[in-house]
Length: 90
Image (cartoon, rainbow, N blue to C red; front, side, top):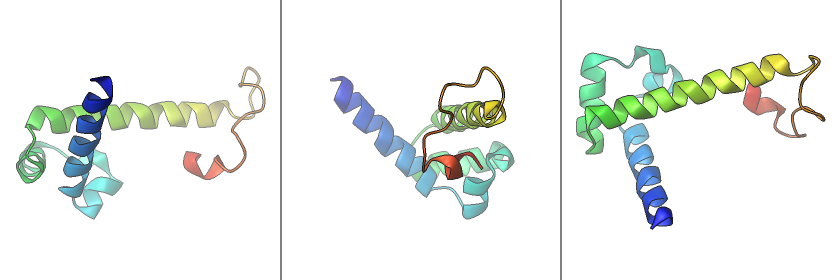
């Protein structure tokens, strides 16, 4: 059941992303009001689901930025960022 729920969430995520313009995908800060309504309608989801996805994305982005700042500082995890993943952090 947990796997099925995960698959539903991934499908919902893809549908929402497919309903966004390139500008919206590049800059989530521009997604407000009417854009949320349009994305929800185009993806067959609710505006609340679109907002939730945007909030989750923004939180993940914030965490990645904080990890990037820690790189090279004392207290950073041993070994730093795994080889080949440097490009993911900007």
